[in-house]
Image (tube, rainbow, N blue to C red):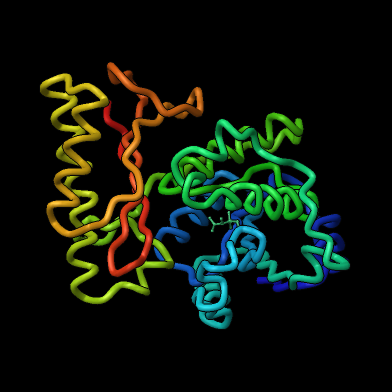
Amino acid sequence: MIHCESRAEILGIRSKQVGTVGVVPTMGALHQGHAALIESSMASCDQTWVSVFVNPTQFAPHEDFNRYPRQLKKDLAFCQSLGVDVVVTPSEATMYPNGDIVAKYIPPLELSQIMCGKTRPHFFNGVCNVVERLFAMVQPTHAFFGNKDLQQRVIIERMVHDLGSGIEVVGVPIVRNEAGLALSSRNAYLSEDGHRLASYISMVLHDSASHVRQSSWSSHSVRQFVAAELEGRGLKGDYVEIFRPIYGECVSGEINPGDHCCVAFYCDNVRLIDNIQLI
Ligand code: PAF
């Protein structure tokens, strides 16, 4: 496995490679959710690259940039054990030379300011900023993103389309622990009780999908049910929305095939997101 940090090293290694290159962009603290992304890339691409970079531009000043888990040694060993070809760990100066953080691509407001964008209005601008820079350096043919961050995946797909980069964006199914909690590096912040409480999120989402499939529940009923069930158990709601990924819109009324219920809830003051395809 090659480990490289500087722009020159990255470009040099990339220029020698032929065939398809899949990239898995990450902020490190790798877990089995990342393993699924890596395995998906390895199954369909000749080369698999993983990037580890805790991106400052997607955090607001009051957010957890400083305490975000950093464990590079472990992450490198994890990638090695999975058979990753190249791990890229750029510094801030490599990603944002001369402190230039101006984004070349700003995602459409109607996509970036709904759901997670309401509480984190800066977030998707920062994600597109770093992912566009990473794509320009690594020049992947494919890029792998987890469906847990569904809005992020849809926004990256839009960016790739708008910029005409020709990269195939692949969404990978959510990986959950035995209690159903969607894996996330931020789960490390949860207490034991928090873990137990947080596992209700997937349970309630699952129940809501059953109601839609069996009783044709409307968007309104799903949103009310999910919010009431989770708040009743002590989780604090940020949003519950019905999201239609092909249009990148939150919808009301009848639920269509492909619609997802997307949620963000606070547990132990940790903001957790999850989603389920309803039908
Ligand atoms: O999903 C993440 O871990 C990050 O948002 C990403 C895509 C690596 C960009 O920093």
